[in-house]
Length: 622
Image 1 (cartoon, rainbow, N blue to C red):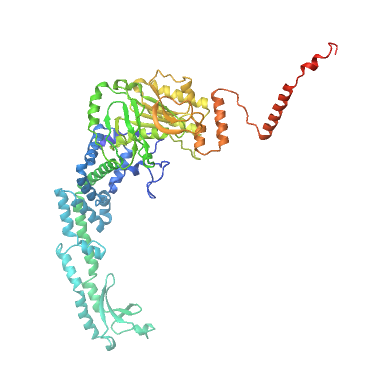
Image 2 (image 1 turned 45 degrees about the vertical axis):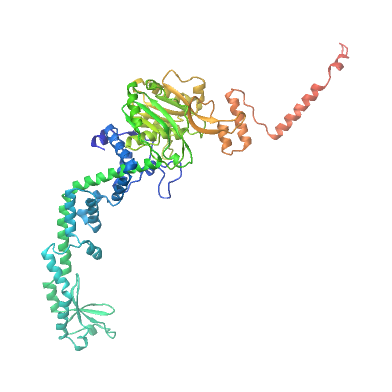
């Protein structure tokens, strides 16, 4: 992504959407949250994973940037390119995080840092990188470094270092000769066991075996030797000869290490001159890693390349939710149509769609014949506001998120879960989907919903996508319906600045009582449900069709959730009364029912009595 695209042309998400938060779906595995990042992440490098997160946080609005990414993904998806993609993936798995290595290099360069730089050099055909590899291989002895646990310089790199090493490696024979000379000056009891050794930091020492009978300081005294320390088996001494060795030879091992550090510092300074080249190569590896990851996901999940356009349109054919489809054996795909398009654009779109690449899939996706009929391009301006109704659990929320995620994925350069997608550039995805309640906030759930919608009202532009999921349900139904209706009509009346709006609702009175002005560009759709006559239970078909739902089928949902039958029946009875605006009859207790039946029997008995004859026998005076 170029610099201008990062700073000035980024898709914005409202604070109601968090693509990194967990969906209410099971995890891919025990260690990875089931989020969009996890589905798209097939990267092999740490810098690739970081770049993927950056693209997710900063989608591009630059059409050329998005088009370039889609082209690259399309190239990596092709079957004939899979052998090359496999080789690239293998190479990427060996690339380390070079920017982090370069940050560590000046502080404390270990063998791992030098090996990481060599790895990136081996997988790039660049002359300067080949020079870097030559510099490192000529200086660092990797085999000896592994044994020593530090960076060891090769022989013949520095004459002074070679001379010190030669002296150090000849110490054993030299010290043996010194030990023979010292044995002539000490008691004969120790002449056969005396030895001279060298300890880094301590210098040269004379050693004799520990005598078990030595207990006091006087026992450790040997003429001509100065006691230093002892262990359970050995006593260590110094004399004038050892001090002369310390002065003339010094800490030879420390001198060797210091000299090697100086040489490695020079190598480090030389490598850092190529730091910009190394970072550039690392960035290219990261971008390549993400694009190949997108391609692998596209092949695995049957994603297709979206068609990006400057037009204000969102047309999706057989779209799927990228997360939800992984949790079910069969997912019902649905279409989406929002926005407007110029009629002259139709030919170009058709040509681009014809070039879309089909990829294999290992999951079964049910392609249903949708009832959402796409109109001609000239009629698209009438579909910028879509209201979706339907019962609970019929798939409305999944459909909303599906549309938002497909739009989002298209802007980061990924292929999308759909048979075909025409996506207009979208500057913001503004949502009211999830109400986040917390004890740290004194606001009610409805107030939180209102704030999210206010953000959408203030920030929405002609290129925005607004997603509203059952807005208004947190207050009285009449007030909630009124607020929802006002928001929808506000968006619909924005004319040339009208965003694309997709909203779901349970306020069926808006549709039944014509509270919405349907002369505005508002289209009504519903989730298809099959229900037998006089049957409480319903079958959700999860298909978006044109029309509206007369009821939410709450009792049917309760029955499907295994709620007790008598509660469901009572709920259905009351629901029918409310819909017909009839008086609600209270439910009687068993005792009240018994008394009511007794009263009914008494009334029936009284009605059966023939009281007319007895009344006729009396006289008027009676």
